[in-house]
Length: 492
Image: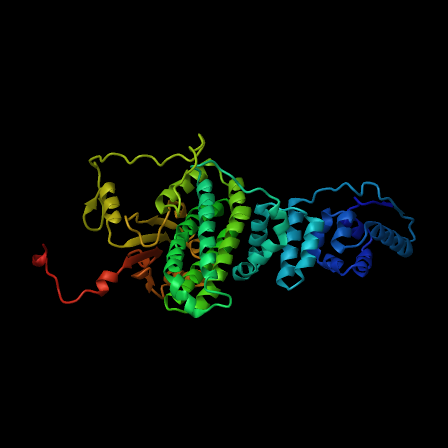
């Protein structure tokens, strides 16, 4: 028998199972091979050359140790050849994902990042953005909480950063939604730099008396930074639903939670500075800017390249429609040139009004489809309907929606329309509605100076069967200020 760099590790362990103990004596890293799942994936395809790198053991030493142990235990003569040591067989997709998952599991257990980077460099070398997303998605499917993955997603990126840094940024011609998102990031970086410079004027350490001179300009720039909401909404209401429809759910579970952290930290920064707490505002602001820069990196090194890989032309047309509904932040779409011939087409022009012919019989009265649509669009509230399977089937396209929506959420599970932090509450409400223990859930919050009332209603048939959930949101700022009375005859 001859051992070479290309000999498969799993073949060797199947024939000589006692070698597993010998391997663990050579390097603690080989302890992982005692895991049957890892042996059946990585071990099945990994060569002895790759195993040597995994264990950080010189290849020749590994081969000779294995040959000597076989001879000692089985009394078989084994030769060693280093021929082909420079050639490397690529790992299969499944093997790569198992290695990546194993690296991240060890990271979450607290293993040294330097060692994990070395293991990654030895076994994988490079990584595709889609692999990071799929790896995180599989870890969550196997039981790792989404909150835990989110908590350490920045550290995940650090493990793979050297590989990601070598990859070019994605590109698209002006007019394409990806070009717009990238252009927004360039504008965002400029604002972040200005805020950094203004925060720097507070001093190091921060001196409270410095705030007065810089406060107006700083708050103005932070307010400008608030347009980041449109950028986030396009990801959350456009890219994420379409990626989910393609089986890619990792980004919506992880990135959305990080987006919400940025939103919260930006508000905390503004509030601290408004009330004159310079040190708190500077500390929270600096953290927020780091989080924004990190998010830009994740978008352009992971999310956007993966989206280009997964989404087709029709998908990008849907994203374009959402861009027009939600709007752009800081820039005009397509700046810098004409859209490519294959760029996303404009939405079809609205049909001219046609006098309806038939009407829908309702419990009371009968309306044409046109009248139903007009009625829903003119309601002084926003409504969203979720069916009995928890899928979004409708939202009212009112002129001034409180919470922006886009057509990409139609057919999406309502659970996927919420960040991980609120998922448990959403499920509790739906379970209570479905089980018949509750019919209404209501909440209220203050949003940019407005008082918003949000109610969820269980939708049931006449006999009580659950048919879905209706969300109704209303700006009641003006209603809260009403006093006295104003009668019809008082109208002018």
